[in-house]
Image 1 (cartoon, rainbow, N blue to C red):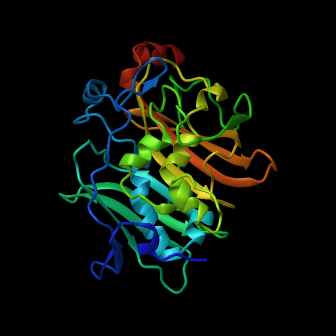
Image 2 (cartoon, rainbow, N blue to C red; image 1 turned 60 degrees about the horizontal axis):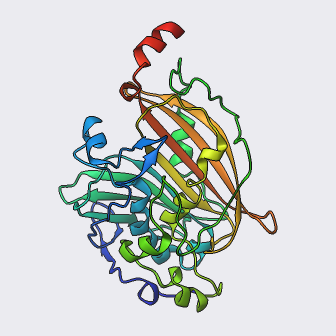
Amino acid sequence: MNHSLADLFDAELTRVDAPEPRIVGPWRTPAQMLAEQEVGGHASIHDEETARKAGFRGGAIEGPTHFSQLVPLGHELFGDAWHERGCISAHYQNACVEGEEVQAWAEVARDGSSIVHAGMQKRDGTPVLSASLSVGPDHSETELDALLGRLRPAGSLVILRDMTVGTKGAEIERVEMTFDQHLGSLYPFTLEQKLAVITEPCKYYTAEGGAASSWGRPIIPFEMISVLTQYSSGKARFRVRQPVVGLFVNQEIRLLDGPLFVGEQYLLEREVVALSESRRVESSWVRTSVREATSGRLVATTLLNSAVFKESYPNYEKERAALT
């Protein structure tokens, strides 16, 4: 059964016809919840002082926080199928800090297309992300599919020199997410705390609303699927030289046979699918398969491009010289 947008969300969407037909969401002010995050025993890019040292105006709001504003657009375009087989594939362009307003938009699907271009911007027009929204089973070529196809192999890496394409996580990780579960130093908050400030609340996310859905259970929001698949990532034991400061650059969450449910156990398998670099950063691309623990059924995949700043690694120049 398909529920209307008004049944599930408070978001009021509007349609504009220029520069092309689009659905536009409301202006929202995302909350910063990672100021106390620790990565490798030190503060992250979401910490005010650390972010400023890296050239940001303040502690960056985590990229997938913005996915929640794209969810009502996906539901409007694709109905309840969006929550079962939807995909957000995003290239992060400019970081936001707490207090900034952002607005999401998506093109109107043409001729029954299952994929559309989407994005997000700040009040002054600064782009926050460029994305594709699609619904399976055929997701066509997503934003990150296209980007990976254009990627050139990395040169001589320093910080990521112990990682190779094809390397898999050291173990299969068993994870779950309950409403009051504390998720460790990477994510110092609970799902319940996130739902209290999420930019776009949805009835499917609550115990009562989820019970009344066609699935009979509350579902995990798209942005919290990122948390579900990352809070145990240290168990993969991918070697990254420390200390470094990093950030998410590109990210895709693709549902294949969802939704993902609150309180359900899942098995995660990780694999490095690409390594890249630019003048300022070295990057790893890790694809994670998400399987239902009880059946082994593949329910979702994620793709995460994490970048680390070369200048944040104290021995970078010395070790680079030694490797050449």
